[in-house]
Length: 176
Image (tube, rainbow, N blue to C red):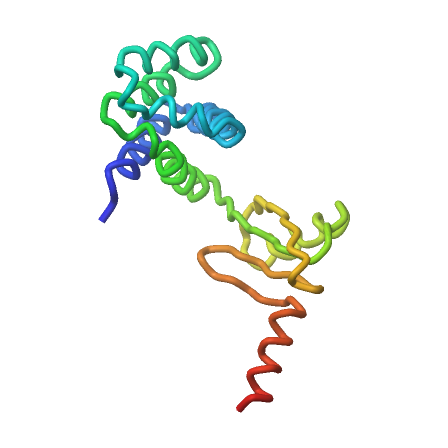
């Protein structure tokens, strides 16, 4: 069962699709999410019951009016009204899931022991795109604990190809 924030994010997507604004509102959602990630205090301020709702909504208008689609601006104020501004990320995730589904985009997280080059990134995207038939949105992360190799995460699944994973498997076999 979907939570309130997921329903709101999905509903915003439905409205955006009806109005032909999915790309613009997705960009808005990413911009707001970026600000919230860079300044966690901003998100806390928008959801703080210590500040009256009208003041929080005024802060949203001051910061974003003219920079966001009116639907996005109204949506953010609605989240304040409904006391779920702290769940903006959940709304954005619900919106993004529908956006990606419509656009045939597969989000992939690649975790490697060392940074991958741009050429390696392009080859990886091409291979995954060929196997899935989808446009790939690849996010690369570095985790030195992998020792070497790579782990891919997509569609809720993890594909292990890291040396640390194989060492763990070998350790398990040797203990048996």
